[in-house]
Length: 79
Image 1 (cartoon, rainbow, N blue to C red):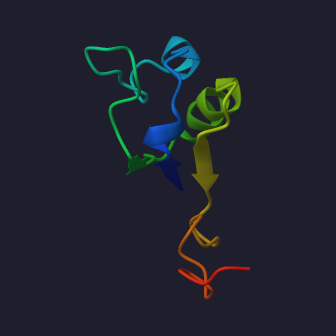
Image 2 (image 1 turned 45 degrees about the vertical axis):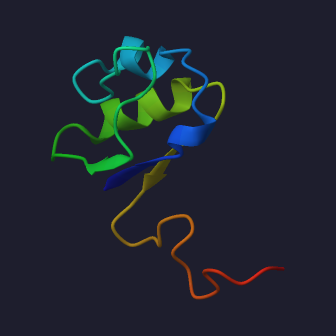
């Protein structure tokens, strides 16, 4: 499982960090400090809860069998 974060859309609510501080670290300004990471075995449920806590929905959970947002076969093509 992977976590993908749209940092530009983060509004700094820090709810992800409140739910899972060990996974969703914040920068000095209170915004999520990573663009994404691999989730360790045993941390999947916590990672999902942190993602669901985000009111802006900028945290995306990608299961190993899924294609990450923006990396599909039509990447770079407008619709």
